[in-house]
Image (cartoon, rainbow, N blue to C red):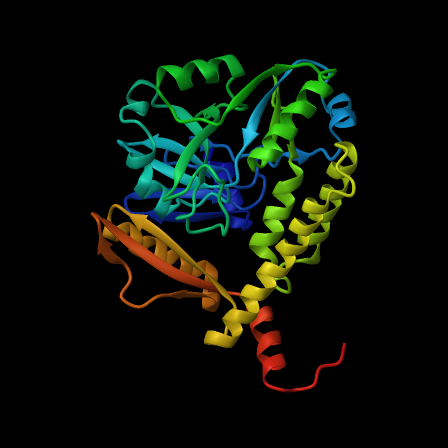
Amino acid sequence: MDRQTLTDALAQDRAERHHFEGLEYVRLTEAVGGHPRGSVVLPGGAVIRGYPSIGRIHSLASGLRQQFQEPFWAEEKIDGYNVRVVFHEGRAYAFSRGGFVCAFSTDRLPDLLPPGVFEREPDLVLCTEIAGPDNPYLEGSPPFVTEDVQLFVFDMMRRGQPGFLPQNEKMRLIEELHLPATRIFGRFLPTDAAALRDLIRQLDGDGAEGLVLKAEFGDTRSKYVTGRSNIVDIGVCSAQLLDLPPEYFTNRLMRMAMFVHEHGQQEDPDLERSLGRAFLSGLERAVAGSRTHGRVDHRYRCRFREHRNALHFIAHMAATGGQRVHILPDMPREEGGYWVLEFERVFDRMTGTLATAFSGATQFD
């Protein structure tokens, strides 16, 4: 990005300066010069483009016809958080979707990626998903990551260049660099709805989140989730019923209903029980939390290799989470060669509503 464009964006509050230890960078808070929100400008003007939002299709057969006219690839959609991993002046950094250096992800990169990845490909940008129960951002995790976190590469870019690497080049680099990656299920045509329907039913039974469908050439992408992933989301977040926008739940109920209809699962008693249990289990957790310690919250636990990165993360949480985030006492603590950090995120509206209800006060519906 040229200096004047960057200067103007900063002056117009469309970009912000940040630093992480010795790295000075700019993140775009709005689209600038054809670069999307979340893009990062490194010293010297090189741009790490923000990862675009991916549209969702709700009906598989009609969605394929509408979105794809040419062959596409189907890959697993993983329930995690998105970071772009880049190499700059001898060090790898993980940038969040919003364009911040993620202190947690950056700290853990030596555990999550094989060594020497960027020695051969220094301008490579790895678009990855980090998932697992010991992550500091999400309440849920995929069933196949049972402890700590894992990283999965799902796309690649080149620094300063638009667009993603072609699928064949991405797969070649994944193999040659021994990168952990999302599962790739193969190449399909828009007329292959029956085969994809079988695949999505298998993923649904396995507890997977769904598919990302990627055009063989170009950057067209769509996602299609399994029915049960909606139930999992509701179960994980129903304790936050009043703190999340209503659309979080109504959108998932609509997706679930469309999935059930499309895949012939109407009047499935196990499915119906699972959905009811998902709502009630989270609300029961909220009631129990309110009764036992006077608040509704979720506790997070994550591990850092370096003490200073845990402190960077705490500072970031204080700046962005405000009073809703409470770091537990004596954190971080050393354990098993790592620095463990535990903190709680409080759900204010559920906390207040249940506190009022338990106080004996009257409420009017």
